[in-house]
Amino acid sequence: MRAVVTGGAGFIGSNLVDALIARGDEVTACDSLVAGRRENLAGALAAGGRLETIDVCDGAGLGRVFDELKPEVVFHLAAQVDVRRSVEDPAADARTNIEGTINALQAARTSGARRLVLASTGGAIYGDADTIPTPESAPERPLAPYGQAKLAAEGYCRMWSELCGLTTAALRLANVYGPRQDPAGEGGVVAIFCGRLRAGMPLLIYGDGSQTRDFVYVGDVVDAMLRAGDANGHRDQRNPAPPLNIGAGRETSVLQLAAACREVAGAPELPPPLHVRARPGEVHRSCLDAGAARAGLGWTASTPLWDGLAATYAALA
Image (cartoon, rainbow, N blue to C red; front, side):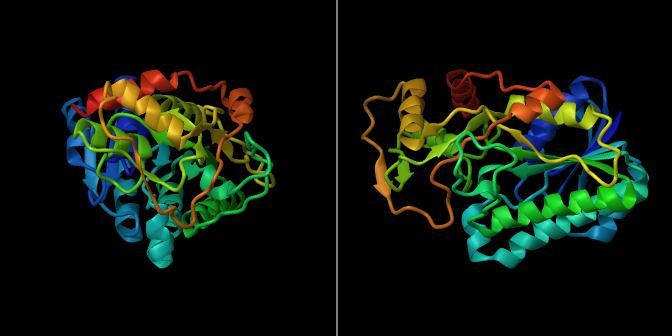
């Protein structure tokens, strides 16, 4: 299969590129390299993968690349993922997460791709949900521009299915963590915690730490994306396929996560975590019901949290 991964030099994208190459696919990563890192693709490039340095906001350029590559499946992971940054500059967030998705959809359509898989978000779209774990039928209540932009991106995917016949799949991801997540980034609490522990620094917790998240390991997310890309897709243009939650279905508080990370790192002698002011636009409780993905894709999260934390910590050595 010929595949393109936008955001392919990023955390999740590079892990997906590796998995596609490992099974024998012809893979090109498209990435601006603003947040993504070329070194994340070192193994993939050595194994025959390709990197195109391009921003998804460059619609004409992306179209030219896709026309040359003629991908069968496009995995659209390029995004602005920082909730706080989306609050500070919602227009920039929209340019990447909405306009960038439109550009990817249009390039996929004109180049003859059969399918596009969108990496969307769960917690940021549902907001503070009434039902935990939260199913796809729950009301959509974004608390920040990031979630609103991802919801709009899903809508464009549905529209392209209806207008153009390009089959699409939107995966609403829980809190993804694992190797290659940037410990110096603004998002990704697991990597940030592990990075601070590696440096012998106390952990910082925003608010009282009672907020919960559904932590799902990157390898499990890659498996879900592969399954979604391989699926034939919903071809009834009047009723495009609905989004699917991709999560472990288990709530873990930030305090519990901090304790687990300290245990994995073997760092009980460090000072206790420091509590700082809570951040605006963040959900208090988030946990996804992934039953529809289990039924539709045969997918379930299989990596225990402890094992995933240990792999993440070891990767920072």
